[in-house]
View 1: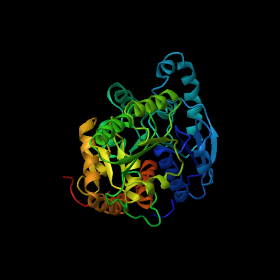
View 2: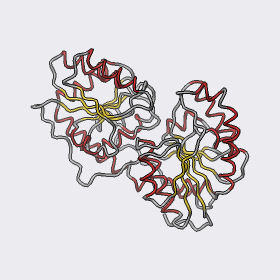
View 3: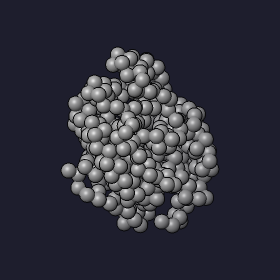
View 4: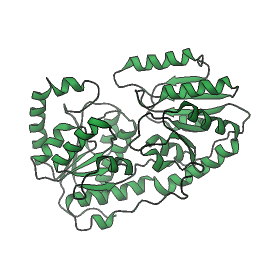
Length: 396
């Protein structure tokens, strides 16, 4: 797609994170796509704190500013919703000024409440990129906020789009996340003569499923199978969750089998070490960036069968899907990988092919830019959206 020719001089991008986890890395891709599409524009990025993400953004020629964004997080939500309301009023006014001074505002989440509210008070173009797949009351509140904001909305998966169910005039569509392709990805070398190497990457929280994986591994070890597990990830201001995870490992006598390590900005060495990658999320993933990163490295994925993961993993071809929250189902999928090394290698190869066809950065950039044009009202917007390819073989 060619550079945009409309007079977009100032772009404001807003994000809730400041590290380099999945949604943060996707945000970098979005800002990069905006820089490519509007090379002469001034891009200003607002973050809640300065961390590893800021340096990546500044490499793209964007200016980073730290703002006290009104973010709806589970931790501290009661305080925000009560004594924090006066601060919200001030934040909305500040966000409205920011939007009014921009030709385009891109908000990479639906939980930055001040910008959603301010969008209703401004006629300037704003695109909200939904990375969340909440449940119950939280979903109803966020859906109401999005609908009320009147901003144009882009989703990261069919699952998120279906959950929010916005009208066609507001919901633009979905674009799957992407990740770079390693220079020379090779399928795992597992042949059954050594322990199967299982990797899990993700923030340690109450729904990513680290304890479920540990419990399934305990069952496998009791059956005499050999595995090695690495769990990489930190917590968001909750050190007690990491302590609880380490206690779970000790309680199952797995200290020599399961290693917990800190999150890495570059997880490539972890993927190369692994044979399979587990994504045992207890709640539906909005998408599942770890899954496509594993596939880019030619690693098959063992994933819970809900949310965006069912759009990524093709069971029987690129990995395994198991019944969510089912310890025995997860253990059964791992056991099949342990006992059938040829499937690990074959599915790793197929996973790499699937990534190349569906989840490349080039494909993401093309669709993202087309949706940006549509949000701006460009005449070639909707027609320029690149269709997502179907899975190369139907899930079984």
